[in-house]
Amino acid sequence: MSYNIKEPLGKYTSKLDNRLFTFSINVIKMLRSLPQNPESKVIHYQLIKSVSSTGANYEESQAASSKLDFRNKIYISLKEMRETNYWLRIIRELELLKHVQISPLIDESIELMRILGSITAKLDGKRKDG
Image (cartoon, rainbow, N blue to C red; front, top):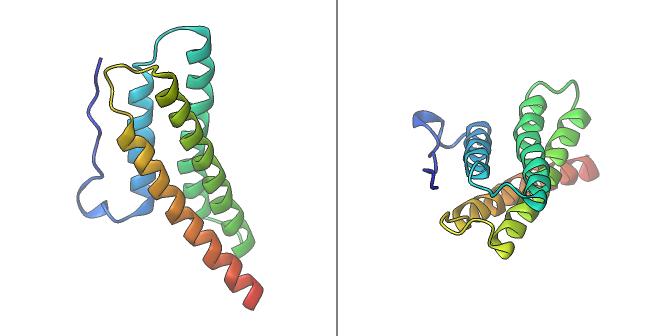
């Protein structure tokens, strides 16, 4: 079974919120191809939680009640993206998806980790300097 990787839409291609949303959709679609065995069920559960939490926490950060709240939500998004990357690599190494190319999802998770990491580093730098 295969699926198509959805690209971010139109004028929102540079917006991180849309990129995280699109990434979540792509991972969830990929998860539909996992075999139905006990180990895959655990991976499916963990991965769907982490990938959806990444975008949800980023969305929450956009309505943060303070700078500290904003930073904490972004940091949670980063941690959840790191976990997402971990589970994607597990799927690849266990070869659970024989006919699905998972490398683009792993690559995108790395890019998103870098972006979120850059945001938290800038926020930490401002907090230390200010």
